[in-house]
Image (cartoon, rainbow, N blue to C red; front, side, top):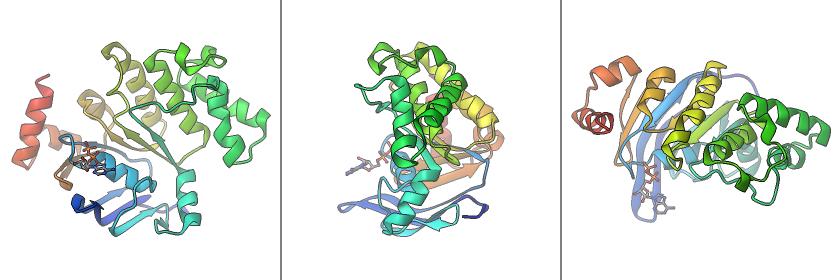
Length: 248
Ligand code: ADP
């Protein structure tokens, strides 16, 4: 697979749940190394859009091409794309019966057939990266929410993805733990990772985003660099949304 730019092409994508149109004509390009933040009201299709990128949801119309591979029903292509795309969810989805280290090594060992020694070395490297190397032998229930989410980020990184998707990664956290997770995400952004983040953390967005996206009713309403997005959004709906969330 060759390096292609844009690394993600989303072209005229539609998505239905039954009769309900959750995505309508969505077009978005993401360059390699670009950091995209998606915001918008609840139910606007943000999560559906990023779930379509690794085929957790199947789109019904249009095209999604990830690093040169078009997402079709071909399971070989889906597997190829999933290997390149890491995803972090609102709920951490760690295996409760496994230690932190085992949570981090199970994917590389089972899916990538990495040796245990190599998988553990990689896991420890990424636990350092998310600043919790000392938690390797604990079970998820022994960690705080912020620590569990950092384990979930490290788990994704252990698969050495080219792209990371974040679906409201801090919205299930107590307020005092949000910053420790955002800090790890900022460091990841600064390392050059291609990232798409669904979040309403606008301080984070201002720090890292190259491109801001506002969605409403399944449509992309506005795409702009952060300076323009925050100071002079071109749509009235985006302006009202920003007024509401920035007031908090
Ligand atoms: P957001 O992430 O912006 O809150 P979602 O992508 O989660 O929005 O949802 C978009 C719309 O699609 C919402 O109206 C939601 O209720 C609906 N939806 C999401 N997932 C499903 C599903 N699995 N089945 C039916 N409707 C769904």
